[in-house]
Length: 200
Image (tube, rainbow, N blue to C red):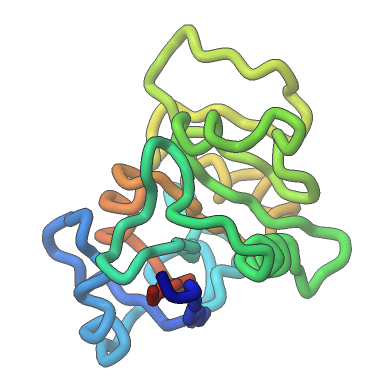
């Protein structure tokens, strides 16, 4: 058997609301995303930054960070398709970096994605962790830097309201599949794609 060689790349693309029908195979439409125009109709600019004068009932824009295989798989048995140090470093840098040192970013995830994070890394440090769940009995051991929301809309509305509208610079959606399907038909402004191709 030959040696495994991994071809890896990372891309960040402007994203539009061109995804009319949610699909697990959303990555197949990336070519149309790259060619599409987009408009921001929310409490932020094209980088997902907050508007200093938010209007009532507006929502935050957000960016999506997703790791995908060559066949556009995003996970297996509750885990990432692979674990590469460069991916983890890229994820940490892009979701932690802010232009204002007095602010931090928020990461939005579903309950299963939260539970897939090793206990010693929960919550992900330096960011506000927003966990989406419909379970009324769901409990998180720590309340520091963690917010629980019952729906995607309530999460975006919460992040567009005080105090988060002033303290959160950017919002990143990090999974899982059901969350991605929903967010791609809303106000995604950037897509950060991590892909690895394994050749034997």
